[in-house]
Length: 175
Length: 306
Image 1: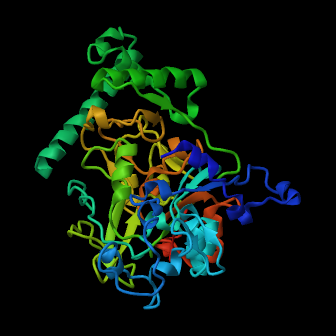
Image 2 (image 1 turned 135 degrees about the vertical axis):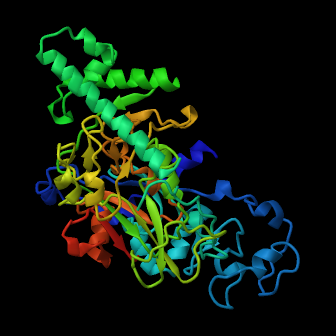
C-alpha cells in the first residue's frame, strides 16, 4: 500500500464533529479531553480489480439493468443488498467507473465509500461518527484508525458471514 | 493429571513455600546464621521472601524488583522482556462496553487476550458464553460451544471478563490485601503478595478470576515482551490472576487487545469522565445493561444493543 496515499487521505476532522471543544468547557475538565484524529482507512489499494478502468476503458457502459452473464456474474447473482432496484449503477458511477456516485450525482472515491453507505444508513452513520459503531483501533485518547463500512461489510452482501470460532476453553478450571 | 493428583501437587507446592518462609523467619529470630535458610533458597529467593507489598515499594525497590523479574524470564526462557509500571492517569476512569447485537461468538478476543497477556493454554481471562436468543440467562449458558461456524441460529453470544467493579467482592474477600482497586478503576493483583487462597475467586460473581495451578509454560516465541508488573508479566504458580483492561497498553493510551482483535467491532473502550469518549457517547444514547446488577457490584463493563 502506498504510504503517500494514506497520508493524502486527510484526517477526517469533520467526522469528529462532536469532538470539537468549546473553550469554556475546557475549564470544567481538568484531564485531557479526548483529542480525536480519525483516519477512516482507505481501501481502494486493497481491491484486487481496482482500478476498474483497467478493463472498463475498452467497454461501452450499458446503462440498462440486466443479469450479468460473464464478468461479475457471481457478484451479481449473489447481490444481497437492497431491493430489486439495486444493481451495479445504483452505487457505481456510470460516467466514471473508478468512482462511486452519491444520490446527489456527486462522484466520490472508493476510499470515501462510507459517505455513500451512510446516505441510506443514517442511523449507522450517527453511531459511526460517534465511534459507537464500527471497528476503531489505535489510541483511546488520540489517533484512531477507523475501518470504513466496506472494510468490514461486503457492500454487495453486507450481512456478516459466519465465522469459524476459536477453540473452546480448556476444561481444567472448575466452574 | 487427575484432580486428586493436581490437588496433591498443589498442597505440596503451597506447604513447601510456607515451610520455607516459616523456617527462614525462625532462623532469623533466633539470631542463627541466615545461611541455614539460604541453603533452601538462593539470594533471589531471600529477596523474594523479604519483598514488600506493591503499594509500599519505593522507586528504587521497583527498579531492583523489575530487573530481577526480567533476568529471571531471560534465564528461564531466553526472552528479553521489559517489566514496566505505568501509573493511572489523573481524571481517567476506564470503562469497557460491548455491543451484543454484533458479537457472533468467534472468540478472536479470547485468543488475542491470551497472546497479549502471556496466558498458558489452560487459562483464559475472557470467556464467551452462548445463551438462547432473547435472554441473557447465564445459568443455562454454554461455555464450550464448538460448532463449525458461528453464530448458530437462535443463539446470542455474551463475552464475560473481569467487570472491574466499583464495589468488588473479590477485593473485600482477600485476607492479605493482595488485590485492590486502582484510581483509574482497574482491579489489580500483586502476584508476589497473593497467597493463593482463592477466596477472591470464590467471591467473584462473574467467574473472572483464574488460578495458576502450575508454573505457566508459554512457548518463548509467544511471550509478549511488553510487560507490566501489575498486568501481563508471567505469573508464578499458585497465584490468582485476571483481566486488567490491558493496563500496560491502556495506561499508555492504547486500546485493549481484545477490542482491536474483534472482527465485528463490538467492543468500545474509553474514559467515562470524558464526555467525548466513545463509551460516554454510548452510555448517553443506548440502552445499556450490566451483568448481575442486583448484586450491587457496580461494574465498569456495560453491554448494549447498538
